Length: 320
Image (cartoon, rainbow, N blue to C red; front, side):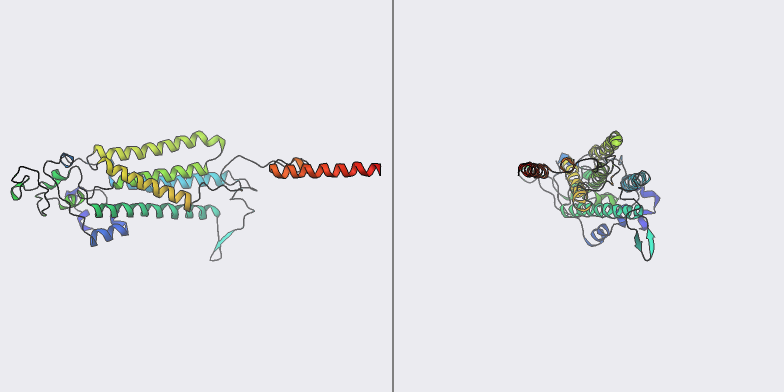
């Protein structure tokens, strides 16, 4: 960690140092040492600083969804229906160690646990791919600055040689040289798409009131644009190949869909009206038994047939 304190390196905040999988990979596993061709134009791009740094990306990916959860749940709690909402007073209280905990807090606790579990999961998968594949970044040769006098780029037949020798780099920045071997898949892409898509799914599930549809679509569009811009910036900054970004986006989308559909159950239909919706059940006391609007078609037919049989029996009894 001391290396991050040195001002002369001018690096971003090392958010990956706080992730246990990243610590294990960095301290116990070396990235795959892949060779290169001297005439490979895909790794000859100049080094550029990141448009969206690690610090900015991690801060937004953690804080923006968290604020969205808090503001949305607080709004649903303030606009709750005392009889139908999941925050209603009719619901049994939740107690932990003889202390009553508001449902607002427990709801947020569940959201945070699921979201950050998926967050660490997608980062773990991404980092495993980086160290296993070891693909060279587009600016690898600019960072490495290989000593061409120690090897030949062509053989006796003037054919390109695949250079596999190690310790050929003359660049002084060993950290960037190591990072230049971790191109596939894109960590920025997987993180941004996961954070954006999970939040989009959450807003789709929670903001179902008809007056909130335009606001919901606006927020979802902003989140999608932020994720897309982050992905495209990695290509324009010469940090990743387009396939790296695509693979990272697939990881982020897959984990976000898994968390939203299988863990959080955002798309599971519920009977209770606890999703900030304005729908209300129709009073059933004002309807005859055979005309209740909540009856299914089969139940309605059965009720009508029973009524017809009763009418026939009553008519026969008059003539007997």
